[in-house]
Amino acid sequence: MAEQTATPSEQLTHARAREIFLRAYELLNEHDTAHIPTIFTENVVFEDDAAPETVRGHEGMKRFLSDVWTAFPDFRLELARGPYLAEDGGVSAQVRMTGTMNGPLNPPGFAPSGRKVSLELGGFYEFDGDRIRAARIIINMQDAAVQLGALPPPGSPGEKVAVAVQRLQARFQRRRAGG
Image (spheres, rainbow, N blue to C red):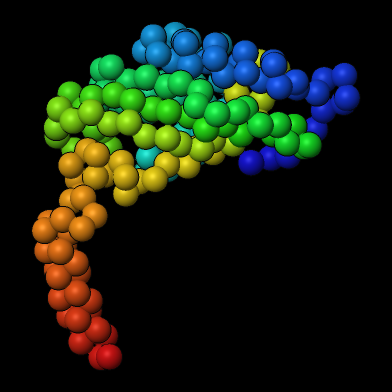
C-alpha cells in the first residue's frame, strides 16, 4: 500500500478512526452496494486473502461484496479490537466476521453448506478523509476452509487421509522430476 502523508492538522485521531470503522461496518452490514461510495474511494485498492485477486475501484468492490453477500446472506462485520494508529497515518484493526453459508461462494465455486462461520481477521487500512482508499485484509484461510467444510478439521480422520494423499502425490512428483 502507498504511504499516506498528512499534515499534523489532518492527522487521524483514534476516536475518528473508530467512528469511521463503526459507520463502515454498519453500512456494509446492510448489504447494499449503494453504500460503497460512502465507504471506499473511487480508486480503492482492496487486497483480501479471500479474494483471488486485488479488488480495485467501486465496480470491483460491488462484485466482491455481492459475491460475499450471496454466499452469506446474514454476513456481519464488527470491530473486535482497535483501531490502532500508525505514525505514518495507517490504521489497523481486528475484525470479527460472521455468517452462514447459505449461498454459493464464487469464487472459488463452493456449494452452499449451511455452515456458520465466525472468523477474526486483521486489517491494515489507509484513509482518504472518512473513506478507505487502501486495505490489506489477512484471514486464516485454513480456519475458514475448515469452518466452510472445504477442509477436514486438524487431527481428524479426514485430515489423516488428506496427508496420506499428499504424501503419495509428493512421491509421484519426485519420481517424475527424477528425484
